[in-house]
Length: 300
Ligand code: GLU
Image 1 (cartoon, rainbow, N blue to C red):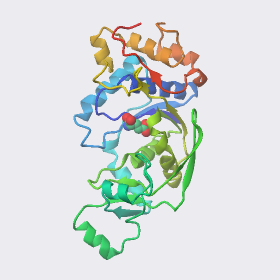
Image 2: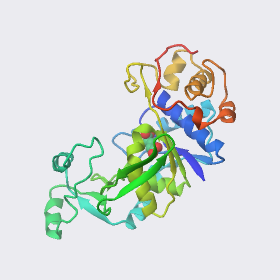
Image 3: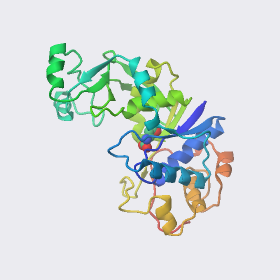
């Protein structure tokens, strides 16, 4: 079975992404798993010139010593597979706008507001009338009151409600929460290490994994990188990609030293290789919570 790293080719990988990728590789390799890559290039609005960006991302990972088994899977090559997987689910058309959902939901739930089921039981005539005005998104029918528990290395057992979530958006794009599950199953992924911002998506994905006949993976949602002021790393306030850092004189080895220290696997400034980090790897050494990076311009 495999671990994986699944970047979206929207821009170069920043230090937080590189650290997550390194952690995912260490978790996978230290447990005897394979490690596979997937380019999440379905969102054509956000993903432009994906080929070049993805190639740069994979080159950056290689420069750090992170290797993959086999060629990366490109989501844009898998549209027929998504059609096939969706055909096994009970889906219905949803015509709601974001605003309508926000207004209908009983309480605010951040980004993960449960869908109130507005379009679930429309009559065929109601659907025809709505379709004339707006193309539908497609949602999967989930039994009412479904909750799904996932096991996360840091968060432990964590339960979340699973609502009728979107499988295909109304512009025809397959939704992330759906494609990620179809692909994790296809790639034999049973270990998911990724950013902590995706922990709240895990219950839906785990539920869908079971529904599609897959085995629910083990999860490790690792803390995001933040500035000393607690803000998420942004391109505006620091040099954050390997090439930004290279312009300031950082070698890939310098970056690996920084990341290794941030994962509790090296002393500050110590020269390491990915192989050396792997020999030392113990997930219990990774400091839990967010990684505060000071935005230093020079290595060491
Ligand atoms: N493509 C997502 C990202 O770059 C990661 C999705 C995942 O790991 O499930 O944030």
